[in-house]
Image 1 (cartoon, rainbow, N blue to C red):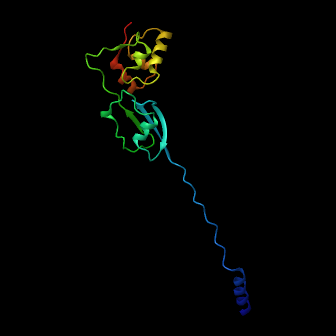
Image 2 (tube, rainbow, N blue to C red):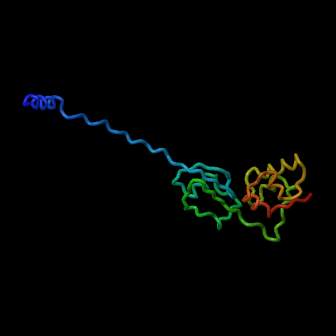
Length: 165
């Protein structure tokens, strides 16, 4: 029995301490993202993928910023945090007063339509192309269905427009 103990101790002394396990490299956490929908008075409305720690201001910035017709007094809380599935609606300024002349969507030039508050980029051109191909609009509400406008854009521009045959 004594020999076994001596041999055991001698074997440990020759080998030395057990090697330490290799260090585990910390895994980089994949960045968490959320999907947010932005509409209304921004340059590029639609779906955006942003960092989970983003704020509403980041949403507006990622959507190209505010358009000229945005209502700065009714903006959403720009310091608010985003979460997956959030919808951010950036409101347009309210409609014209009674003394403002409305723009005729059947006769206005692209430049005249583009100057309408709340008119998003490319929409004036789409209005002119549609009426050239398909004829005059019977009502302003046809813009919503024919050009598939979102509710916020339609609400912003419709008070400024009229459809004369």
